[in-house]
Structure formats: structure tokens, C-alpha cells
Image 1 (tube, rainbow, N blue to C red):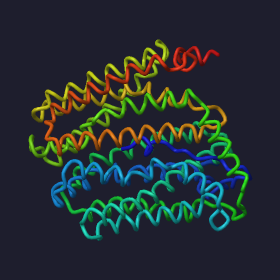
Image 2 (cartoon, helix red, strand yellow):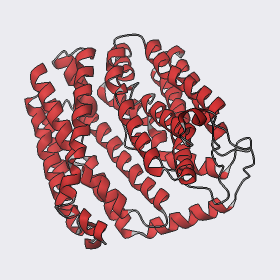
Image 3 (cartoon, rainbow, N blue to C red):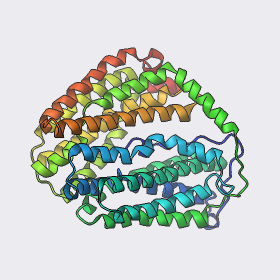
Image 4 (spheres, rainbow, N blue to C red):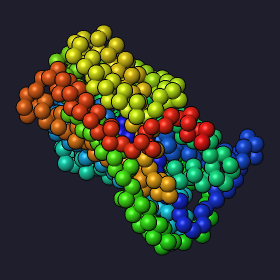
Length: 435
């Protein structure tokens, strides 16, 4: 799953907002924000679960590898191009805020994008199983999902501000994303079946969201185009472009992610060399997801005891060293142990990069600034996967040699840390909280 699949970036409209009205269910449950929470939870869950990089990750990759006989480079290229819309998510936020659809900024966008995404998933199953048709259909499906995700984030902001429950709704968002991440191991199991089964499993929740949005989310069709938002976007872009700290942070994130990766080559190594089944790969993914979630919880302890600069040094060193564990990746037992330990440790080790991204975003241009950093992060991942897959396939670099190359190039990012502004990285979390 890409970083952008986990980030909701919307820019509030400069004009009036549509206020989510009270639905009839809240009269039963005595929760005035119940409908909003339901929409947000369903929208975030579905837009994460149905992604080509989540539920569709293994079915599409195995289809490309085993049926179309594509090599690691082409498989990596397909997945990265298909997920490209998540790098441009801010555009969906700008469009929905600036250009109402049938007089609403949220409702009709959510209705149409959820239905369209479901239909496009079904089309993925029936188009000719060739590289280009599959890529174009998956790309369009992801564009529709980006709108579902972004609109759900906009509803979260508006509903949270209206009812004063931004914290509760944010908790709903995080819970929905964590549950939806189980789509990765589920997809590994579905990879052993036809692509039509995966498409149906992805489409059904999207169609259910369509009906939930249609009947439970009401928005008065009074929104009008607001040209002032374009002026605001231009101002935010100028602020972001002049923010040196933003680009220092973006550069470091790119360097860490740029190291030739073994994400796609690992799948080929698992299946061609170690002969792992799709079900066992699904088990590995499930255990890794749980370990990664647990690892993230420990960052709260460390961020209050060390400066961000210290944590960034640790991040680079540990990310580099931990990848060397894959040199011992030789059978099922070692694979399971290594994946669990690596997921736990790297989840913890890379959280300083997320912390840096949040700190480096200029005030007054949070949406644009953070979107730039997330896009740079994702471009780094794209280049990493393509370069690693190219070395593995075209230059016949062994998997273990690729592990050494990844560890060494990741370590080079340590030379960029001294150039980060002291104001940005020399404080502890508790220092900022006290201030």
C-alpha cells in the first residue's frame, strides 16, 4: 500500500460548506454525528481496501507474472503506473471544492465515484488480459477511488467541525484504514483464483457505499463555484515553493526511499526460488501487517525522549541494517521470522520520516505542502522499485546482492541529515507540547 493510499488531503472551500444534516438513524442511536461517522468509516475503508495496491496487489502481480509472463521490471512498472493517481490526490480535493457537482461538493462526487470504481473493477476482470488494457482500466479505477477517499476526508473535516467531533471521526478513519489493510493478505489468497473473484470482492463494498451515500448522506444542492479557491491554491503553492525546510525534508525522504528496492523482486524470489504458495505469502503479509501496527505504537515513547535529528539518524541506520536480515531469507521459517521482525522494526524506524514531513509543512499551506512531501515520498518508492527490479531482471543481480545494494544506498542518506534546519529537528515531542 502506498503512502498516498493512507493520506487524506483536501482543501476546504473558500466559500460556504455543505453541512451534513442529521440522518434518521441518529434518532435511534442518540448520536447526532452517526451518519457522518458511517460515511467516513465506509468511505475510508472501501477506498483503501479496494485499491490495486491492497486487495489487487497480489492478484494483479501474479497475473502479470504467471499468466502474462512479465518480468520483475514490467510488473513493478505496471503497479507503479496504476497507482500514480494516489500521487496526485490533491487535485481531487481542489476539483471537489471548486467545482460543485449537481449543486453539491461531496454527495454526488461520492455517489458517482463509488459506483464508477465498482464498475471499473468489474471491467478489469473482463478486459483482455494484456498489459496495456489492464493498466488503463486499473489506472481509471484508481482515479475513481482517489475521489472516494478524498471526498470521505472532506466529509470528515466538515462533519467533525460541525459536530465538534474531529477526534472521534479521526479515530474512525484510522480504524477503517487498519481493517482495510487486511485486504493485502486476503488478496494473496484470492490470487490463487480467477481475477473475476477479486474484482467481485472489491466491487461489492463499493456498490454498498454507493447505496449508503445515496440514502443516508444528504447535502442541500446549494453549493456554487467559488473562484477564490484557485487564488488560495496559488498562494499556498508560492508559500510551499519558498519553504526551504519543506524541500530539505522532501530531499531526505526521497534519498531514503530512492535506494534500489527489492519489493517486487522479493515476490519473484519467494515464488521462483523458494516456491512459496500464494496462501503462505498471504500469511506472511497478515503477520507483517500486525507487526507493523504494533511497532508504530512504540514511537510515542521514543519521540518524547530523543530529538527528531537523533531519531532520523537512527531511522537511516536501522532501515539500512535491518534490510540485511533478508540475507538469511532461505525457507518458510526464516521468511516468517524475518518479515515479522522487519515489519515491526521498520515501522518504528521510519516513523521519524513521517514526523519530519509533518513538521516541515509550512503553516498556512498545510494541504499543498504535505501533498508535495507525500508525492516526493511516493516518487522515491516508484524509482526504488523500478531500479531494483531492473537490476534484478536486466542485469541478473541476485536477490541477496540486491539486498546489499539497498542497504548501502540507504545508508548514504545519513549525509543529508546535518543539513536539516535545527529549528525543525532539534526539538523533542514533549518540548513542542510544552511550548
